[in-house]
Amino acid sequence: MIQRFSDHSANERTFLAWVRTAIAMMAFGFLVEKFDLFLAVMAPQLAEQSLVSHHQAFGRWAGLSLIALGVAVILISALRFLRAAKAIDEERPERAPGFGWDLVLAMALVLVGVAMILYLSHLFG
Image (cartoon, rainbow, N blue to C red; front, side, top):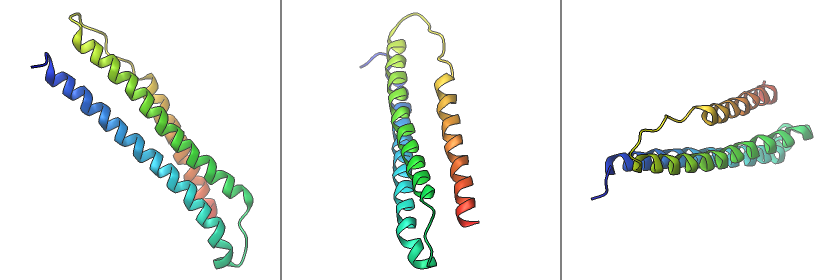
């Protein structure tokens, strides 16, 4: 039996939850970029007018930002997973990790979300 198996299992479950979240973020980023492409192609035909070109740039920017945030979440969660696995195996107690990267990623996601809300309210409003 592996020593501290339940701790290692909890660490792995947490890592896998972060990976699932990152995959969802990347998939949503892909969807945002492709939806914006869909709007660029279909809206002129349906509304008999063309969309402004900056709409395509924003959709690309927002989609790629979400994909990049997803990649950053996977990298940071992998580093935290390895650090926690090492700390579990050590005999001496270790200080809990700070929330620095977590807050940076959360704020970046909030900024992309607010930008998307403003963009969609302007596009459809």
